[in-house]
Picture 1 (tube, helix red, strand yellow):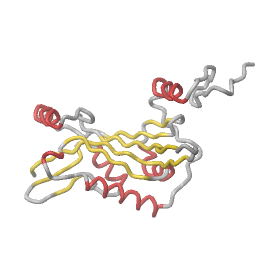
Picture 2 (spheres, rainbow, N blue to C red):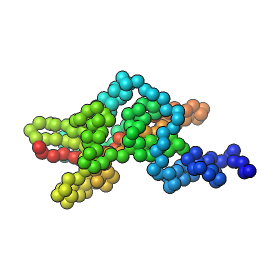
Picture 3 (cartoon, rainbow, N blue to C red):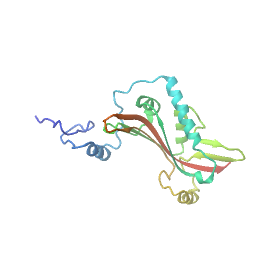
Length: 204
């Protein structure tokens, strides 16, 4: 019976953990190549109170709304992060997590298509989460799909925005731990959720 080398890192997803990895980057690369659709949640997740989840949802909507600007130069990729615990993130997005990485302790959610706007509205308990009405028919909103007949115009708008990320209309939400350490090996880390989306505008 073979034993595992304690100096190497092993994949916790593979049923046969024969080959280990010299470092974390090698294990992370393996997960990305072999387990890109793995989304089984870890057992250490703890329930979070409804009041805390409600507060976090409102904070997310607030940050989204701040980025739905009315100026034409604002059209294009938008990114922001908000600090939150792993438990709280999973509490809100657990049914929509498309990938979980045990090695990176990160979660990924992807939303796109004609039903995505309403889907996120239900998650955040706010049906207008991704649009901001400036009056006089001016509306800024999160683009999650490209209506038929608008492909050519939308392609031009993307080129003007100098952004090809999320160009097809998509919101990506990722939770991970970020931070660092100083010369005395003092670690400072915190979990945060990053939101990436494409801002568009129209006349209604």
